Image 1 (cartoon, rainbow, N blue to C red):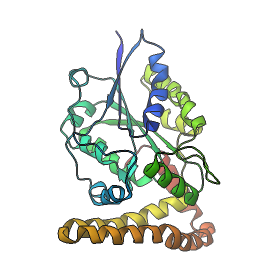
Image 2: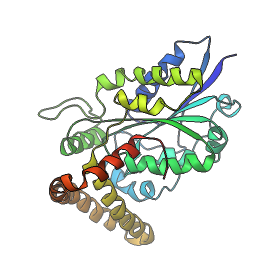
Image 3: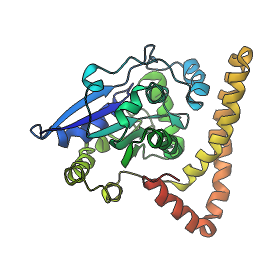
Image 4: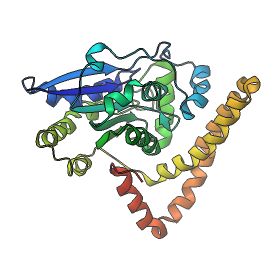
Length: 304
């Protein structure tokens, strides 16, 4: 009897869809053993791509505070099946799973699909996904899902270069290299090679033994941890908590506060972040063991 595999994702640019489908390919190649179903999450009122700068920044408070929008219900072929494995693809908006992903998780459909089911999370991001994954773990735990693996593919360029390329991509639709800037997002090489992770997952799924799945994925480069970015995320979450609540509470001043937030965010990226980097580097010898422990935790699938 064939096993049922569900691939859940949301995509605007197509990047995450390509990653998810490449990871699912080893299952697709064995059609006599697996039935693979794809579920592309869709909002009733979706966000246009490319983004305008106004909409991009105006999405911040709802993104960070995990305020859902209404989604189109999953098709019957998704709702009426019991799945043996779920590959869950998501992207990060403002250090949090994106609004479409949160909308699915809070829709009522998610718990029925995820409960008691092995799940591998898959993200395609600029580079800061670590604490967003921690937020997603809470949902999976509350739903009774079984997190067995995580794959986090990122833009491998330095933090400041990737800021420029992602803004170019999001606001113009141009991912390709231009001028002195490289291509944005996860590299084509990594996207096209993501099938190697699916091969590892399929091998462990076949045996039903997932104890070494995440270590095997990590060995193949599925998860990269940059300690400095973890520090930036922690600081960013504290700051975003203040800004998002302020904007939501002061509805009448929202347009003005969004403009202030935009200026602040750019200053934080280009001025405050480099300042934070200096003590981070100086404290490396003292905090090495602590950061190593943190790295191992974030590369894993456990939840504190």
